[in-house]
Image 1: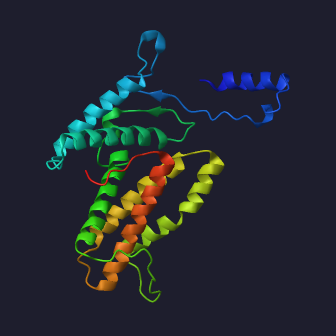
Image 2 (image 1 turned 30 degrees about the vertical axis):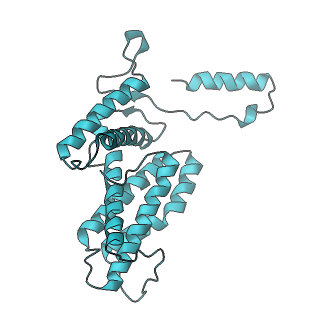
Image 3 (image 1 turned 60 degrees about the vertical axis):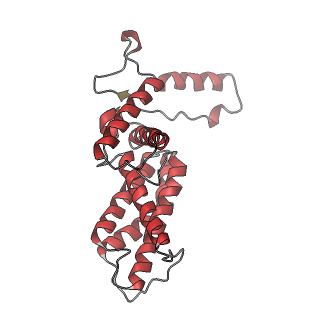
Length: 242
């Protein structure tokens, strides 16, 4: 709804012969609706950031406690986890939609631990961190480089994960060219989904041979670090345990 206002502003600046006028660009975003409908300031239905975050924190606490996997967390650690989940859910739900599209933001749906959500990616990251931590405790070497045997066929789950990871540079270039962070968010989610499929399909620490163990630990290490890179790009925090 601000698109026309910026067009007028830019036209005025050109008429004023401002030297930067031709370099201005307005990245327009679509409207964000709530389950109750469109937010309207005249009717008092506009949601402020503090109130929304408070609601997100309550939902995060409820969802996390329902899963019952945080018995060993201190009260302070739990509060930190709730905040991490709330911020991650909110940011990812907003950024995963292409900027020009109108979207419906449902706070409860955004913190679902299954599906295309921030908490699903956060949970996957915590799973990777736990796996790599268990490998370190068992004094297993987590390779930071690995020479693949080109005569050995990759398992479909391994291949899908590798192909996706090596496409990161192309994805970033496309997102920059289109001014569309949703492309990176989709890559983020797909990486988490493919890693979970890989994790479910193949033994890692209990692999049949040391070579298989090293390869799968290396793929886990690469996936973990790729998630970390996107965490920095999108500003979506990833916990090491949850």
